[in-house]
Length: 343
Image (tube, rainbow, N blue to C red):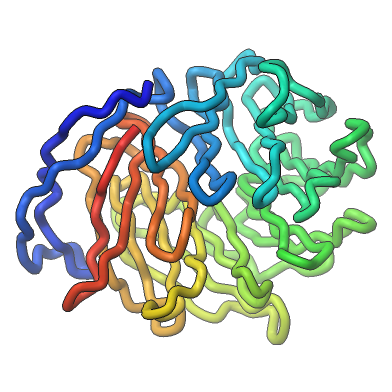
C-alpha cells in the first residue's frame, strides 16, 4: 500500500456535454499507488484537508492520505460489505455502515476496533449523516427507518418509520438541525433531527433518488437519479430556504448517477457541482446555468460509486474496478478535469 508506480493515462479525449469528442490532449503519467482495498470501493468521504476515509466490499474501512496514497489506518469489524462511510469535518471520528445491518464508530487515533456500535436496523444500512459537532448520528436503512443516535453513549434517541421509504442516502445541513434524505420511493425528504419528523418532502421524481448533498451555505441541496440507456440519470438542484422547489436539472449521464457533490467556491471558478455515474464518467456542471463544463471517462474503472470533495479543485472518486481516483480541475482556456493519481 502506498507504493508509487507509473501508469500511462489513455484518457486523452475531451468530451462535450453530448458525449462527442471535441479534441484530444497529450497523454500524461498518472501516479499509481498500491490499492487500499482488495475489492470494489463503495464509498469515500473527505476527513481532513489531506485525508479521506473509504469503505469497500472487502469489509474494511481505510483512512488514507489522498496526496500520497498511503493507508494510515485500517479498521476491520464488519462481517459484510461496507456500504457508506462518513465523518464530521476535521473530526477524529469516522463512521461506517454495512450490509451486515450494523453501524460502527472508529477513532482515528484509537485502537483498531470500533469505539461504538449502533445496532437496531433490520436490513442493510444505506445512509449515514453525522452532526457538525459529531455528537449525533442519523442512520437510514432499507428497512424503511431513520434513526438518531448519541455518538458518546450509543443510545438510540429516536426512530421513525415511513412505509416504502427505502433510504439510499443521508446528509446533514451545515449549521442546521435538518437532515436531507433520498429514497427508492423517488422522493427527497427534509428531516428535523430534533424530533425526528419530516419537515418537508419535495415533489417525487420519475426515478429512484440515489444520493444527496448540501451546499456549504445550506441554501441548496442536490439529489441524483437512477437511470439507464440515457433515460433518467439526472441530478437535481433544490431550494432549501425559499421556494423549497426544484431549481434546475443536470442531464447528460447515460446510466444511474450514483453521487452528486457541491464544490466549495473557488477564487476563479463559478459555483459548480460534480456527478459520477455507472457509465464510468465524472461530470462537472455550472450550478447556475446547468451547463456541463467538463467530462472525464475513467476507462476500465467500471461503475463509479461515490465522490468526495477535497478542495475547490480536487475530487476523489470511488470505483468498482480500479480503486480511488484523484481528479483535479485545471482552468486553461477551457475547464479540464484530469485524473492525477489512483490508489
